[in-house]
Length: 135
Ligand SMILES: [Zn+2]
Image 1 (spheres, rainbow, N blue to C red):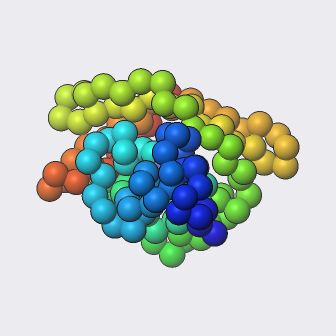
Image 2 (cartoon, helix red, strand yellow):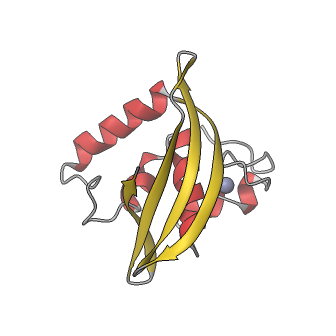
């Protein structure tokens, strides 16, 4: 279920969906870890689980060999959770990669499941990928 192109982007960048995360979800490469971070949040919010799978670093702890099970788990998570917003707290480059510190606002049946995470991103062939979280 995608928002209308002219609606605000789910990642709360303040931009329209069509000029924010929509192109990234359609396969345009993210130009920075922050852009990728936003697009992954939007993918969760919209249930575009393939984007989450495609942008997970194969050496990271979240990567799963069984794509079918992984996809099913992601779909369940996306359907259960209500994604209420994203706050970017900080971004900085790290050794060989980059860090994005954010707070994701989510809830399940009215219960708050918001969390903060320091995500690590690395590049493969100049493509940014989500690697892991430092909590
Ligand atoms: Zn966005």
